[in-house]
Image 1 (cartoon, one colour):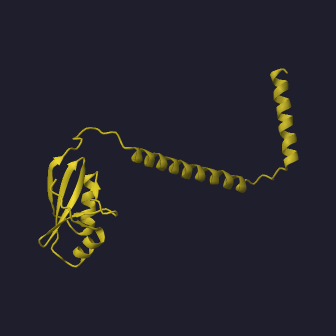
Image 2 (cartoon, one colour):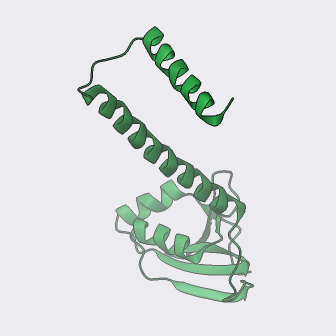
Image 3 (tube, one colour):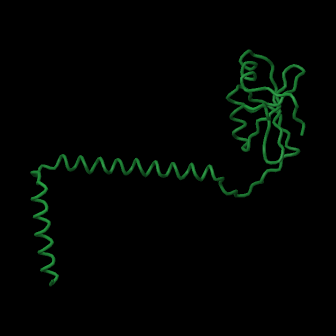
Length: 153
């Protein structure tokens, strides 16, 4: 893979771009991942992750967004060693499934909360007089007894 043994971290790259240095980028595919080789002057350096290893991206779109956010909008792509899955309908990875499930539960919780608040407000707004616990129990006992008589017990 034509990446460099020398690395550059995000902070240094950000400072170079912000300072207006001529920075070139080459996106290099290897296996199923993408790495970025930065060129400035005669130096070639691979973008490093936090622990000094080359930073790699699974999704090309994520990498393109990263470069665009830095202000690097033109770059070369070397896909000679890239072995992607093609245009298959890949199953989502566990993280995206888990995120989808969390999002679904969050939406369900918001919907339940709205329903519950509506029920409470409806009860508060009800103009009928309140009924005490003992009276409510007596009314329910009378209804239950009437239903049991009707059922023939």
